[in-house]
Length: 430
Image (cartoon, rainbow, N blue to C red; front, side, top):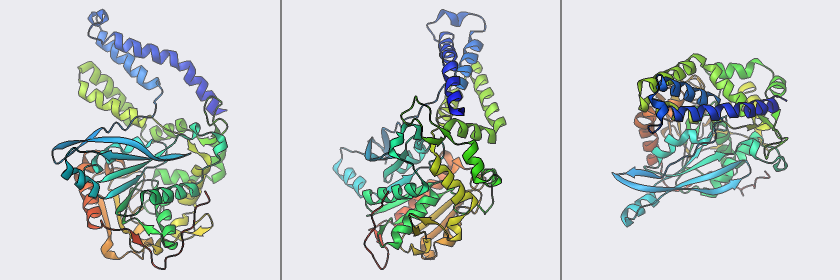
Protein backbone atom coordinates (compact mmCIF):
# COMPACT_ATOMS: atom_id res chain seq x y z
CA UNK A 1 0.00 0.00 0.00
CA UNK A 2 2.97 2.36 0.44
CA UNK A 3 3.24 2.98 -3.29
CA UNK A 4 -0.47 3.77 -3.52
CA UNK A 5 -0.23 6.21 -0.59
CA UNK A 6 2.74 7.85 -2.26
CA UNK A 7 0.74 8.38 -5.45
CA UNK A 8 -2.14 9.91 -3.48
CA UNK A 9 0.27 12.24 -1.70
CA UNK A 10 1.84 13.29 -5.01
CA UNK A 11 -1.58 13.97 -6.49
CA UNK A 12 -2.55 16.07 -3.47
CA UNK A 13 0.70 18.02 -3.63
CA UNK A 14 0.44 18.77 -7.35
CA UNK A 15 -1.82 21.88 -7.10
CA UNK A 16 0.60 23.49 -4.62
CA UNK A 17 3.61 22.85 -6.87
CA UNK A 18 1.76 24.38 -9.84
CA UNK A 19 0.90 27.39 -7.69
CA UNK A 20 4.51 27.72 -6.52
CA UNK A 21 5.77 27.54 -10.11
CA UNK A 22 3.32 30.22 -11.21
CA UNK A 23 4.23 32.39 -8.21
CA UNK A 24 7.95 32.14 -8.94
CA UNK A 25 7.37 33.28 -12.51
CA UNK A 26 4.98 36.10 -11.60
CA UNK A 27 7.42 37.61 -9.10
CA UNK A 28 10.48 37.26 -11.32
CA UNK A 29 9.31 37.87 -14.91
CA UNK A 30 10.69 41.12 -16.31
CA UNK A 31 7.33 42.24 -17.71
CA UNK A 32 5.40 41.53 -14.48
CA UNK A 33 4.33 44.48 -12.29
CA UNK A 34 4.74 42.24 -9.24
CA UNK A 35 8.54 42.48 -9.55
CA UNK A 36 8.31 46.10 -8.40
CA UNK A 37 6.78 45.16 -5.06
CA UNK A 38 9.01 45.16 -1.95
CA UNK A 39 10.46 41.70 -1.31
CA UNK A 40 9.54 40.43 -4.81
CA UNK A 41 12.90 38.73 -5.36
CA UNK A 42 12.74 36.98 -2.01
CA UNK A 43 9.18 35.84 -2.70
CA UNK A 44 10.13 34.52 -6.14
CA UNK A 45 13.10 32.63 -4.65
CA UNK A 46 10.91 31.07 -1.95
CA UNK A 47 8.30 30.02 -4.50
CA UNK A 48 10.87 28.42 -6.78
CA UNK A 49 12.49 26.53 -3.92
CA UNK A 50 9.04 25.25 -2.87
CA UNK A 51 8.31 24.24 -6.46
CA UNK A 52 11.55 22.34 -6.91
CA UNK A 53 11.16 20.51 -3.60
CA UNK A 54 7.64 19.38 -4.45
CA UNK A 55 7.62 18.80 -8.21
CA UNK A 56 7.70 15.43 -9.98
CA UNK A 57 10.96 14.92 -11.85
CA UNK A 58 10.55 13.21 -15.21
CA UNK A 59 13.23 11.36 -17.15
CA UNK A 60 15.58 13.95 -18.69
CA UNK A 61 16.67 13.94 -22.31
CA UNK A 62 20.26 13.28 -23.34
CA UNK A 63 20.08 16.44 -25.43
CA UNK A 64 23.33 15.72 -27.31
CA UNK A 65 22.85 17.32 -30.71
CA UNK A 66 26.44 17.96 -31.67
CA UNK A 67 30.05 17.39 -30.66
CA UNK A 68 33.17 19.39 -31.45
CA UNK A 69 35.85 17.31 -33.17
CA UNK A 70 39.15 19.01 -34.06
CA UNK A 71 37.52 22.40 -33.74
CA UNK A 72 34.60 21.54 -36.03
CA UNK A 73 31.04 21.00 -34.78
CA UNK A 74 29.66 17.66 -36.00
CA UNK A 75 25.90 17.02 -35.72
CA UNK A 76 24.81 14.05 -33.57
CA UNK A 77 21.56 12.16 -34.00
CA UNK A 78 20.21 9.91 -31.22
CA UNK A 79 18.36 6.84 -32.43
CA UNK A 80 17.03 3.55 -31.03
CA UNK A 81 19.17 0.77 -32.50
CA UNK A 82 17.53 -2.14 -30.67
CA UNK A 83 14.56 -2.36 -28.34
CA UNK A 84 13.69 -4.87 -25.64
CA UNK A 85 10.94 -4.78 -23.00
CA UNK A 86 13.24 -3.53 -20.23
CA UNK A 87 15.89 -1.66 -22.22
CA UNK A 88 16.59 0.27 -25.39
CA UNK A 89 19.99 0.26 -27.08
CA UNK A 90 20.65 3.85 -28.16
CA UNK A 91 23.13 4.90 -30.84
CA UNK A 92 24.55 8.42 -31.02
CA UNK A 93 25.50 8.80 -34.68
CA UNK A 94 27.88 11.55 -35.75
CA UNK A 95 27.67 13.23 -39.15
CA UNK A 96 29.96 15.42 -41.25
CA UNK A 97 29.68 17.04 -44.70
CA UNK A 98 33.42 16.51 -45.21
CA UNK A 99 34.13 13.16 -46.91
CA UNK A 100 37.59 12.74 -45.37
CA UNK A 101 36.29 13.55 -41.90
CA UNK A 102 33.30 11.23 -42.40
CA UNK A 103 35.70 8.43 -43.36
CA UNK A 104 37.69 9.06 -40.19
CA UNK A 105 34.52 8.98 -38.08
CA UNK A 106 33.57 5.59 -39.55
CA UNK A 107 37.00 4.19 -38.66
CA UNK A 108 36.75 5.22 -34.99
CA UNK A 109 36.47 2.45 -32.39
CA UNK A 110 32.96 1.49 -31.27
CA UNK A 111 32.07 1.83 -27.60
CA UNK A 112 29.13 0.22 -25.80
CA UNK A 113 28.46 2.07 -22.55
CA UNK A 114 26.51 -0.16 -20.18
CA UNK A 115 24.65 2.20 -17.87
CA UNK A 116 23.66 1.18 -14.34
CA UNK A 117 20.17 -0.01 -13.51
CA UNK A 118 20.34 1.28 -9.96
CA UNK A 119 17.91 4.13 -9.52
CA UNK A 120 18.92 6.88 -11.92
CA UNK A 121 18.32 6.99 -15.65
CA UNK A 122 21.07 6.43 -18.21
CA UNK A 123 21.10 10.21 -18.81
CA UNK A 124 23.25 10.43 -15.69
CA UNK A 125 26.04 9.41 -18.10
CA UNK A 126 25.37 12.30 -20.49
CA UNK A 127 28.82 13.79 -19.89
CA UNK A 128 30.38 10.36 -20.37
CA UNK A 129 28.69 9.92 -23.75
CA UNK A 130 29.38 13.47 -24.95
CA UNK A 131 33.10 13.13 -24.22
CA UNK A 132 33.39 9.65 -25.75
CA UNK A 133 31.79 10.90 -28.97
CA UNK A 134 34.89 12.96 -29.76
CA UNK A 135 36.88 9.82 -30.63
CA UNK A 136 34.37 6.95 -30.78
CA UNK A 137 31.13 5.60 -32.16
CA UNK A 138 28.92 5.34 -29.07
CA UNK A 139 26.05 3.09 -27.99
CA UNK A 140 24.43 3.10 -24.54
CA UNK A 141 21.92 0.96 -22.68
CA UNK A 142 18.83 3.00 -21.77
CA UNK A 143 17.01 1.02 -19.08
CA UNK A 144 13.23 1.32 -18.89
CA UNK A 145 11.38 2.38 -15.77
CA UNK A 146 9.86 -0.92 -14.57
CA UNK A 147 6.53 0.74 -13.77
CA UNK A 148 6.18 1.43 -17.51
CA UNK A 149 6.65 -2.24 -18.52
CA UNK A 150 3.34 -4.18 -18.63
CA UNK A 151 3.21 -7.08 -16.20
CA UNK A 152 2.53 -9.53 -19.04
CA UNK A 153 6.13 -9.01 -20.21
CA UNK A 154 7.17 -11.19 -17.30
CA UNK A 155 9.84 -10.72 -14.62
CA UNK A 156 13.37 -9.39 -15.12
CA UNK A 157 16.20 -11.11 -13.24
CA UNK A 158 19.92 -10.45 -12.98
CA UNK A 159 20.35 -13.36 -15.42
CA UNK A 160 18.20 -11.43 -17.90
CA UNK A 161 20.47 -8.40 -17.50
CA UNK A 162 23.45 -10.59 -18.45
CA UNK A 163 21.53 -11.94 -21.45
CA UNK A 164 20.61 -8.40 -22.56
CA UNK A 165 24.27 -7.35 -22.49
CA UNK A 166 25.24 -10.39 -24.59
CA UNK A 167 22.48 -9.66 -27.11
CA UNK A 168 23.59 -6.04 -27.43
CA UNK A 169 27.22 -7.08 -27.98
CA UNK A 170 26.18 -9.56 -30.67
CA UNK A 171 23.90 -7.00 -32.29
CA UNK A 172 26.64 -4.36 -32.53
CA UNK A 173 29.30 -6.88 -33.52
CA UNK A 174 32.73 -7.28 -31.97
CA UNK A 175 34.79 -5.79 -34.79
CA UNK A 176 36.67 -3.08 -32.84
CA UNK A 177 34.05 -3.04 -30.06
CA UNK A 178 34.99 -1.86 -26.56
CA UNK A 179 32.65 -2.17 -23.57
CA UNK A 180 32.56 0.40 -20.77
CA UNK A 181 30.55 -0.46 -17.64
CA UNK A 182 29.87 2.14 -14.98
CA UNK A 183 29.19 1.09 -11.37
CA UNK A 184 26.60 -1.70 -10.96
CA UNK A 185 26.89 -3.24 -14.47
CA UNK A 186 30.55 -4.15 -14.01
CA UNK A 187 29.32 -7.42 -12.48
CA UNK A 188 26.84 -8.53 -15.20
CA UNK A 189 29.18 -7.27 -17.96
CA UNK A 190 32.05 -9.38 -16.63
CA UNK A 191 29.64 -12.33 -16.43
CA UNK A 192 28.36 -11.74 -19.98
CA UNK A 193 31.84 -11.60 -21.52
CA UNK A 194 33.01 -14.58 -19.43
CA UNK A 195 30.15 -16.75 -20.68
CA UNK A 196 30.71 -15.66 -24.27
CA UNK A 197 34.41 -16.51 -23.91
CA UNK A 198 33.58 -19.97 -22.55
CA UNK A 199 31.39 -20.59 -25.62
CA UNK A 200 34.08 -19.43 -28.02
CA UNK A 201 32.12 -16.41 -29.24
CA UNK A 202 33.77 -13.24 -30.58
CA UNK A 203 34.56 -10.86 -27.72
CA UNK A 204 34.97 -7.10 -27.35
CA UNK A 205 38.53 -5.90 -27.79
CA UNK A 206 38.53 -4.37 -24.33
CA UNK A 207 36.51 -3.97 -21.14
CA UNK A 208 36.68 -0.79 -19.06
CA UNK A 209 35.13 -1.17 -15.60
CA UNK A 210 34.54 1.96 -13.57
CA UNK A 211 33.63 2.13 -9.87
CA UNK A 212 31.84 -1.20 -9.70
CA UNK A 213 31.16 -3.82 -6.99
CA UNK A 214 33.13 -6.76 -8.39
CA UNK A 215 34.10 -7.84 -4.85
CA UNK A 216 32.33 -5.89 -2.11
CA UNK A 217 34.39 -7.60 0.57
CA UNK A 218 37.13 -5.12 -0.32
CA UNK A 219 36.84 -1.77 1.54
CA UNK A 220 33.10 -2.11 2.27
CA UNK A 221 31.16 1.17 2.24
CA UNK A 222 27.90 2.27 3.89
CA UNK A 223 26.05 0.99 0.82
CA UNK A 224 27.65 -2.45 1.18
CA UNK A 225 26.96 -2.54 4.92
CA UNK A 226 23.29 -1.73 4.39
CA UNK A 227 22.97 -4.65 1.98
CA UNK A 228 24.56 -7.10 4.40
CA UNK A 229 23.04 -5.87 7.66
CA UNK A 230 19.60 -7.32 6.89
CA UNK A 231 18.62 -10.75 5.51
CA UNK A 232 17.18 -10.99 2.02
CA UNK A 233 13.63 -11.50 3.29
CA UNK A 234 13.83 -8.11 5.04
CA UNK A 235 14.40 -6.33 1.71
CA UNK A 236 11.58 -8.28 0.08
CA UNK A 237 9.14 -7.41 2.87
CA UNK A 238 10.13 -3.76 3.35
CA UNK A 239 11.22 -2.20 0.06
CA UNK A 240 9.37 -4.22 -2.58
CA UNK A 241 5.92 -2.93 -3.60
CA UNK A 242 3.37 -3.36 -6.37
CA UNK A 243 3.03 -0.73 -9.10
CA UNK A 244 -0.30 1.16 -8.75
CA UNK A 245 -3.08 0.89 -11.32
CA UNK A 246 -2.33 4.27 -12.96
CA UNK A 247 0.82 2.94 -14.68
CA UNK A 248 1.24 0.46 -17.58
CA UNK A 249 3.13 -1.90 -15.26
CA UNK A 250 0.25 -2.13 -12.78
CA UNK A 251 0.75 -5.06 -10.42
CA UNK A 252 4.44 -5.54 -11.20
CA UNK A 253 6.65 -5.96 -8.13
CA UNK A 254 9.34 -3.25 -8.00
CA UNK A 255 11.76 -1.42 -5.78
CA UNK A 256 10.15 2.04 -6.20
CA UNK A 257 12.24 4.97 -7.34
CA UNK A 258 10.95 7.24 -4.59
CA UNK A 259 12.30 4.88 -1.92
CA UNK A 260 15.65 4.74 -3.69
CA UNK A 261 15.72 8.54 -3.81
CA UNK A 262 15.08 8.73 -0.09
CA UNK A 263 18.05 6.41 0.38
CA UNK A 264 20.27 8.60 -1.80
CA UNK A 265 19.35 11.72 0.17
CA UNK A 266 19.69 9.94 3.53
CA UNK A 267 23.34 9.18 2.75
CA UNK A 268 24.22 12.91 2.76
CA UNK A 269 21.26 14.89 4.15
CA UNK A 270 23.32 17.88 5.31
CA UNK A 271 24.97 18.29 1.91
CA UNK A 272 21.59 18.30 0.14
CA UNK A 273 20.12 20.70 2.68
CA UNK A 274 23.05 23.07 2.25
CA UNK A 275 22.78 22.81 -1.53
CA UNK A 276 19.13 23.91 -1.49
CA UNK A 277 19.84 26.74 0.93
CA UNK A 278 22.69 27.91 -1.31
CA UNK A 279 20.29 27.77 -4.28
CA UNK A 280 17.88 30.06 -2.44
CA UNK A 281 20.72 32.45 -1.61
CA UNK A 282 21.96 32.44 -5.21
CA UNK A 283 18.49 33.47 -6.39
CA UNK A 284 18.48 36.33 -3.89
CA UNK A 285 21.93 37.49 -5.00
CA UNK A 286 21.03 37.19 -8.68
CA UNK A 287 23.73 34.57 -9.27
CA UNK A 288 21.87 32.98 -12.18
CA UNK A 289 24.79 30.79 -13.29
CA UNK A 290 25.08 28.99 -9.94
CA UNK A 291 21.29 28.68 -9.71
CA UNK A 292 21.14 27.09 -13.16
CA UNK A 293 23.89 24.62 -12.23
CA UNK A 294 21.79 23.59 -9.20
CA UNK A 295 18.72 23.11 -11.41
CA UNK A 296 20.58 20.96 -13.91
CA UNK A 297 22.12 18.75 -11.23
CA UNK A 298 18.87 18.10 -9.37
CA UNK A 299 16.82 17.69 -12.54
CA UNK A 300 19.04 14.64 -13.11
CA UNK A 301 19.58 13.54 -9.51
CA UNK A 302 15.89 13.65 -8.55
CA UNK A 303 14.74 11.74 -11.66
CA UNK A 304 14.60 8.09 -10.62
CA UNK A 305 13.10 4.89 -11.97
CA UNK A 306 11.59 1.75 -10.47
CA UNK A 307 13.71 -1.40 -10.55
CA UNK A 308 12.20 -4.86 -11.15
CA UNK A 309 12.00 -6.62 -7.79
CA UNK A 310 13.54 -9.86 -9.07
CA UNK A 311 16.60 -8.08 -10.44
CA UNK A 312 17.07 -6.01 -7.28
CA UNK A 313 16.83 -8.99 -4.93
CA UNK A 314 19.10 -11.10 -7.17
CA UNK A 315 21.71 -8.32 -7.03
CA UNK A 316 21.51 -7.99 -3.25
CA UNK A 317 22.00 -11.73 -2.82
CA UNK A 318 24.53 -12.43 -5.59
CA UNK A 319 26.73 -9.34 -5.36
CA UNK A 320 26.50 -8.02 -1.82
CA UNK A 321 25.55 -10.91 0.44
CA UNK A 322 26.97 -14.10 -1.07
CA UNK A 323 29.77 -12.61 -3.26
CA UNK A 324 29.22 -15.36 -5.81
CA UNK A 325 31.32 -13.82 -8.60
CA UNK A 326 34.64 -13.45 -6.72
CA UNK A 327 34.08 -16.82 -5.01
CA UNK A 328 33.67 -18.54 -8.39
CA UNK A 329 30.20 -19.86 -7.51
CA UNK A 330 27.91 -17.84 -9.78
CA UNK A 331 25.73 -19.71 -12.26
CA UNK A 332 23.80 -17.73 -14.90
CA UNK A 333 21.02 -19.66 -16.64
CA UNK A 334 22.74 -22.90 -15.65
CA UNK A 335 26.25 -21.89 -16.82
CA UNK A 336 29.12 -21.22 -14.42
CA UNK A 337 30.68 -17.75 -14.72
CA UNK A 338 34.44 -18.13 -15.05
CA UNK A 339 36.30 -14.87 -15.87
CA UNK A 340 39.55 -16.81 -16.34
CA UNK A 341 38.12 -17.95 -19.70
CA UNK A 342 38.61 -14.40 -21.04
CA UNK A 343 41.93 -14.39 -22.87
CA UNK A 344 41.97 -11.78 -25.62
CA UNK A 345 39.87 -8.90 -24.22
CA UNK A 346 42.02 -6.25 -22.51
CA UNK A 347 40.93 -5.03 -19.07
CA UNK A 348 41.05 -1.51 -17.59
CA UNK A 349 39.67 -0.85 -14.11
CA UNK A 350 39.09 2.64 -12.72
CA UNK A 351 38.36 3.65 -9.13
CA UNK A 352 37.90 6.96 -7.35
CA UNK A 353 40.19 7.67 -4.42
CA UNK A 354 37.26 9.02 -2.38
CA UNK A 355 34.48 6.78 -3.72
CA UNK A 356 31.95 6.22 -0.93
CA UNK A 357 29.76 3.84 -2.97
CA UNK A 358 32.26 1.35 -4.40
CA UNK A 359 35.30 1.32 -2.11
CA UNK A 360 38.89 1.06 -3.29
CA UNK A 361 39.78 -2.45 -4.39
CA UNK A 362 36.24 -3.52 -5.27
CA UNK A 363 36.63 -2.86 -9.01
CA UNK A 364 40.33 -3.71 -9.11
CA UNK A 365 39.37 -7.21 -7.91
CA UNK A 366 38.45 -7.99 -11.54
CA UNK A 367 42.16 -8.44 -12.29
CA UNK A 368 42.38 -11.29 -9.76
CA UNK A 369 39.55 -13.07 -11.56
CA UNK A 370 40.64 -12.48 -15.16
CA UNK A 371 43.77 -14.60 -14.92
CA UNK A 372 43.65 -15.53 -18.61
CA UNK A 373 44.27 -11.96 -19.77
CA UNK A 374 48.00 -11.23 -20.25
CA UNK A 375 49.43 -8.74 -17.77
CA UNK A 376 50.38 -6.45 -20.66
CA UNK A 377 46.66 -6.12 -21.47
CA UNK A 378 45.65 -5.26 -17.90
CA UNK A 379 45.69 -1.75 -16.46
CA UNK A 380 44.33 0.01 -13.35
CA UNK A 381 43.88 3.69 -12.59
CA UNK A 382 42.89 5.29 -9.28
CA UNK A 383 41.62 8.84 -9.81
CA UNK A 384 43.15 11.19 -7.20
CA UNK A 385 40.58 13.17 -5.24
CA UNK A 386 37.60 11.73 -7.15
CA UNK A 387 34.40 10.46 -5.60
CA UNK A 388 31.99 8.05 -7.27
CA UNK A 389 30.45 10.45 -9.79
CA UNK A 390 33.75 12.18 -10.51
CA UNK A 391 35.16 9.17 -12.34
CA UNK A 392 32.56 9.37 -15.13
CA UNK A 393 31.22 12.93 -15.07
CA UNK A 394 32.61 16.42 -14.63
CA UNK A 395 36.04 18.00 -14.88
CA UNK A 396 38.02 15.04 -13.50
CA UNK A 397 36.35 12.69 -15.94
CA UNK A 398 37.14 14.93 -18.91
CA UNK A 399 40.71 15.88 -17.96
CA UNK A 400 42.04 12.88 -16.01
CA UNK A 401 39.95 9.78 -16.64
CA UNK A 402 38.95 10.12 -20.28
CA UNK A 403 42.53 10.40 -21.62
CA UNK A 404 43.29 7.11 -19.84
CA UNK A 405 40.21 5.44 -21.35
CA UNK A 406 40.79 6.88 -24.83
CA UNK A 407 44.42 5.78 -24.94
CA UNK A 408 43.63 2.32 -23.58
CA UNK A 409 40.95 1.76 -26.23
CA UNK A 410 43.24 3.07 -28.98
CA UNK A 411 46.01 0.70 -27.89
CA UNK A 412 43.70 -2.31 -28.20
CA UNK A 413 41.67 -1.31 -31.26
CA UNK A 414 41.51 -3.92 -34.01
CA UNK A 415 39.48 -6.90 -35.10
CA UNK A 416 37.26 -8.93 -32.84
CA UNK A 417 38.84 -11.26 -30.32
CA UNK A 418 37.76 -14.89 -30.39
CA UNK A 419 38.21 -17.26 -27.49
CA UNK A 420 40.20 -20.46 -28.14
CA UNK A 421 38.46 -23.82 -28.63
CA UNK A 422 35.55 -22.16 -30.36
CA UNK A 423 32.19 -23.82 -29.86
CA UNK A 424 28.83 -23.00 -31.44
CA UNK A 425 27.25 -20.08 -29.61
CA UNK A 426 24.25 -20.91 -27.50
CA UNK A 427 21.22 -18.79 -28.10
CA UNK A 428 19.82 -17.16 -25.01
CA UNK A 429 16.52 -18.56 -23.86
CA UNK A 430 15.70 -15.26 -22.24
